[in-house]
Length: 151
Ligand SMILES: Cc1cc2nc3c(=O)[nH]c(=O)nc-3n(C[C@H](O)[C@H](O)[C@H](O)COP(=O)(O)O)c2cc1C
Image 1 (tube, helix red, strand yellow):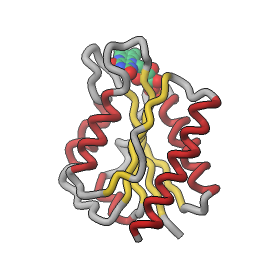
Image 2: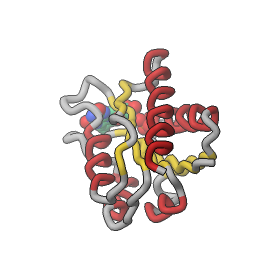
Image 3: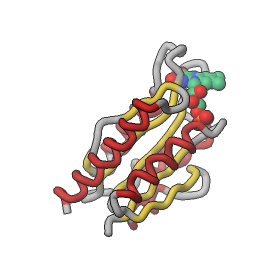
Image 4: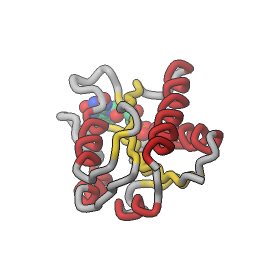
């Protein structure tokens, strides 16, 4: 059985909810899933998993990373995740000049780990609507397909 770790940063709960929706979709696909808040885990814990996911919101006047996710972000590039599949998703607000830039930032950070991108980044405007929920379902399927091809 494939194992996934979903790490999230969430100030007001939206991204946490997205992480939990993704966990349900992955569990439906028979993946063993853990969901952890970013201050509660170290990036090296991805090594014990096959599928590595970061779910993040964006904050600050210039589209900054969530402050509490910074340590996790910088430690991530030190970890070798060769052979793993990764995906990044998150919540933002289209009212801001840059929409969900933290999702792109984490995607770039994962590239440095040698992990394989299992699916395109998924950016959700505020709370997920029905269309977004379908995209989360597809995101889960893409990750599992990439894992199956890669193992
Ligand atoms: C001060 C502040 C700055 C924000 N900056 C951005 C931003 O630059 N880009 C963006 O897409 N969303 C931005 N957001 C929106 C949040 O990322 C969005 O509300 C998200 O759903 C919050 O997720 P959470 O409930 O998991 O904390 C900002 C929100 C606040 C309060």
